[in-house]
Image 1 (spheres, one colour):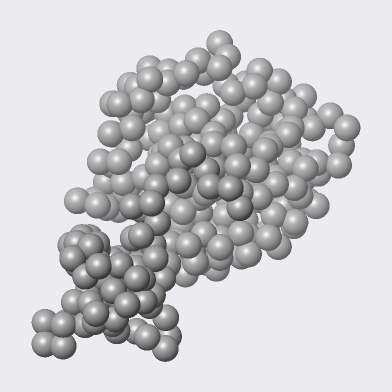
Image 2 (image 1 turned 30 degrees about the vertical axis):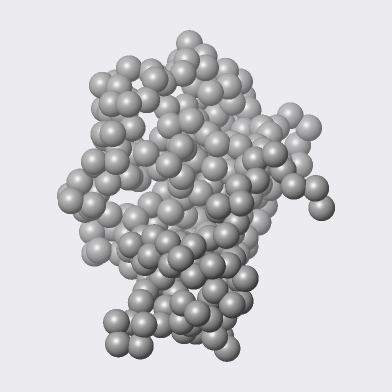
Length: 273
């Protein structure tokens, strides 16, 4: 296979060091790594030392053997959680799609916004399209706003202060102070609603999904044309979305704090401090 022009041999060497470890060789000496990789000891030592500093490897001072570090475990648990999110949410998405006949989507929380990871499109000819892999903005659409509203306050404020929010339609909120007030309302309500702020003809409802650590892990959304997402239809749809998000949260190990679904505002403010 032809190598990409962006391929970095230095990073490849680091990955090869990590790949030396497996169930049969959980601990290795510097000499073992050097022989396995066919690399000089000084070069392997520099890589291994850097990985130890980063927490990706650990070195036993007595035996001088290296083993995989806790940072890799943390990353592995994150991958597992992301995989579990789609698996656990699948029956909920299908139920929600059947009950609403609208497009339903699952979003994962990311540093850049809400990433769409699963979609079931409405069977109706006039419908909203959601693209898997697309990152929704923080300030427009229901999913981005509901995730941003439930991030720990320091993270939320960093985004509000740093982001130059894009104006998608005349109804898009771009002023940080206005958006901050809107997010307060979203947290109090337990869901976010969008009407024409991302697409002038689209409307949506989204509720937060929490993990076992009471951190927002994603969002469950229903979207459709504004002509069908009427004031009469929305209350039942909001309840279905909130219940679905609560079911997925419980599947991820989330337990209510006794004050209803989702962390209290104090929990969100205090998290990460």
